[in-house]
Length: 101
Image (cartoon, rainbow, N blue to C red):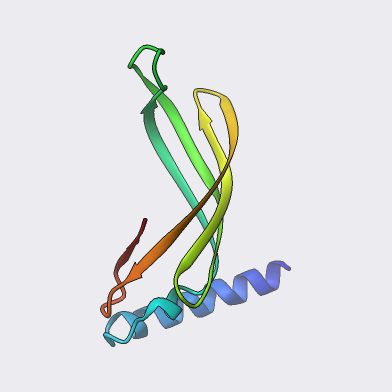
């Protein structure tokens, strides 16, 4: 398993510069299995006091050829961990930049 992850990561790093300069990206370019990690600060929902608490959000997403993302992960606010699922539509620009909503 470790070898296959290393191989995929290496191929991704090799292919990324070639794709980035080609203006040939499409929704299918993001197809695959992704991991994400975010760290920062957030406030709890009311009626809690509006003070910033340390926050981490990490998990995985599976994207299809139409850039539909199906994600699951863990959201940790000040030590309280909650399982989270989310789905969203990716928007891939021809220059290989984009967003997920």
